[in-house]
Length: 589
Image (cartoon, rainbow, N blue to C red; front, side, top):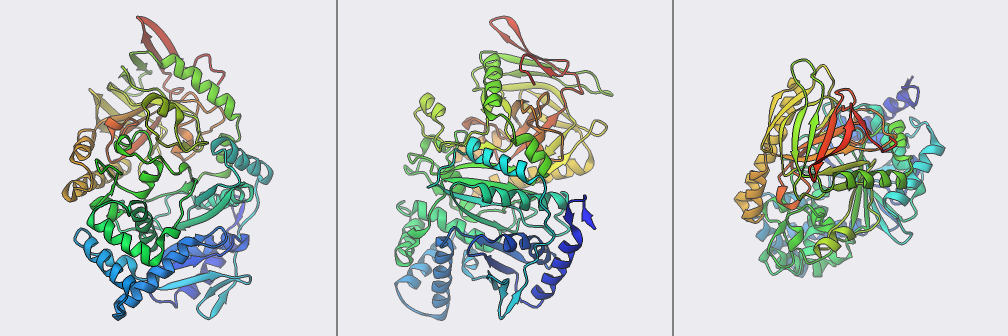
């Protein structure tokens, strides 16, 4: 039997049972899988292997390096040093580690647990996965190639048009493992498609590519997978080791003894995400990573490396961004191809035309036809807010337009697929009907019969009506996001001005966007649906300007065509029409 006539579910299940029998015999929760060189059979076998491990409630960390893994070398040296320290060995390295752990534990009491080595390490060999003294067969037979030529063409376009990737550049790619049944709310086939897509991203990548992934969490407050969290902390501290604070001075001593400067940073990040979260990065939430002038602090190494324009910390950070990022979701292959195998230059030209129309308007008026007892009717104040483009453009590390405007070297981020013109409203009032999809901890499908109804007054929103399951998840997300603000406030890991800003913006509308991708088609995923031409989307929470930051961003897509939207702006006292009866005007979409 095959899944949707594409993948061999019998082979997937057989492989899962095979690996479960082997993994059931090992003790402990933490499992590291190392594939020293990218090997197609080993990579595809991770589908069954991860499904098996997660059904047994184990945590996985997968590392697939580009040639020699400096990260793996560092991890092995750190684990060896920790073992020596626990055995009572006295040398400069163990003393430096003891001091670093001791200082950090004042803020993070359970910090030392990060240094415990994994319970099990599985190595990929030519003949199979080596688990202790056994070699487990590869189980890749679930895979069936689908639309291979077009998929390869699409992947090449992304490397070229989104990233402009060069041969010398180092790329970090992450993908999704198969979660356990409790986490599997998205279609299983979509997770398998994520393997198929990543396989062709690897095959077409012109740069130096390495892959990694790890078990995700249901809650953003949970502890992350342990190996990922250790590596993330080391990466962040390595960037900050010259900062004159006790914790970083202690780390600097450890770095020198273990030569942790071997850790390198990617030029580009490409990631596919599914349901769930990384978890709470304790070092970032309780200590933070200072800007070079120590006027502000970052919450994660990734934030520091990206230095995006809308982060409040960016204006204080003297160091330029060192990487750029493009990301997508576990999309079905058909939707991935439809929305990304496009004329990127033509879409960007369309976006610029629409931006020019909106730029200079003081406000937009949005009105839809009445549906049941509700209708979308909004007054969106723009004033001097920046009109932005989702062009899928991460071809440079530095956003040159932003640099010319501000003198600040900020970074680049790209949605894959792309296609929207958006801004952070100065204010917004009225109500709207969200009837396509909402993204919380994953994308959730809405519909015309059970939409989410949102009322907005002076920029602050209130949920009038929503399906109970959606409302419960949204409230949980907001509760956890509020707790994270309080955590940062309690530990002073962020400047007081930023935590106050996050509180102030917590119930505000952060984004108003008009979608422009001509080929994107309706699916289960927000990242595609928020790009479908003749639809719009509105985000609750954080905006895309530094003064509108908060701790969450929840997008809601609205079917403007179904609701027959009229959208027009006012510019110098005249109407500027954007949309009539749910159709974008003069944009050939």
